[in-house]
Length: 305
Image 1: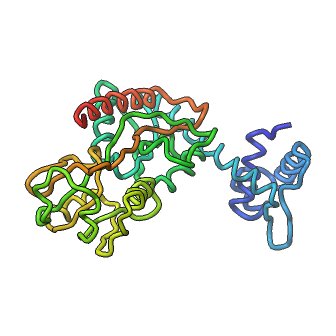
Image 2: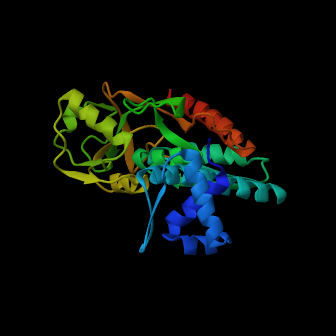
Image 3: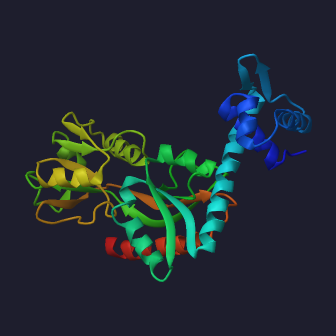
């Protein structure tokens, strides 16, 4: 028999406080009642979830699994309560979006601006992060949606659904002082000894860049600044002779007096889209944001072509 949410909350309180007495105070229960609830939980599951010692209570391996799952449930309950309160006050949300750095300058702002037209009061949160950091938060329910690269090798799983929004080709961003500044097209091999700006490890974008160098047989740059901040990259390019790998959706200004962008010969491409938990149902504002993402992506892809 599956445990009830009340019993799971009892276990979470003990795991959080480390003792039955502190958990009982937090839950507003008597200690005997809390002990009975844990005993009932263990009978329903047929396993022991806690070890009690003089120093306090610790989770068994089975209890750790249950507490982890229960913590996810707690996040969903907290969000449900927040949505109910917001609805009573005429506010749509909360809705939490995880976004990788490359989609923050253009795609996400365009979509949020579009979604906000006529939507009334909103409670939307945008969390920036690399793919590896955002995926666990999506699975746990801490965020509702990730906007960023999709259809990446070795990242597919049954619990996550991906939807492609646009095709994003790779280009070369060229600093104002670079000898390649006036070029409209460049081969990666030509830039082997140039000073570079490239992303840190931990993102699918970095994996794409590494793959470009490997497939072209170009050694990894020796003169290198690692930075994921797009404003920093853009400012540094505008004041230096450095180059970088960019994509059309990364920069609000992809060419101009301070920096320029050139086509990368056989540079490849990636796909940008969004990820959600399989079977998850969005609040109305979530559906509105997804529709705005699709409309904004269609407009951006028209510009890229």
